[in-house]
Length: 64
Image (tube, rainbow, N blue to C red; front, side, top):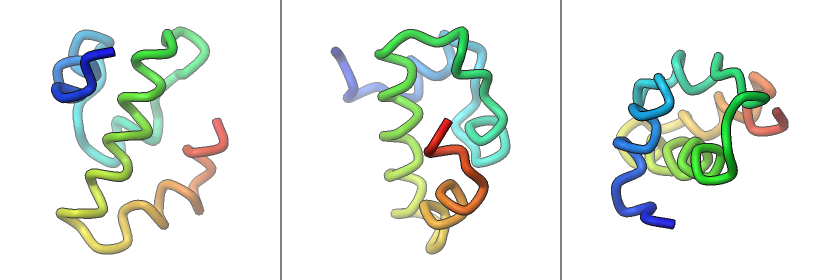
C-alpha cells in the first residue's frame, strides 16, 4: 500500500503530518490507505515527540 511515504498519503487527503491535523481528521471520508497512514503517522510522531502516541490515545483519535 506504499506506506513508506505516509506523509504524501496524508497530504493527498488534505491532512498535514502534525498532531492537531491528524487528531481532527474526518475519517468518515478517508479510504483504508489514508486511515493506515494516519495510524502510522501517530506511531512515527512518538519517535520525535515523547508522549505523542499517548495524546492520540487520550484524545480518542485512535478509536475514531
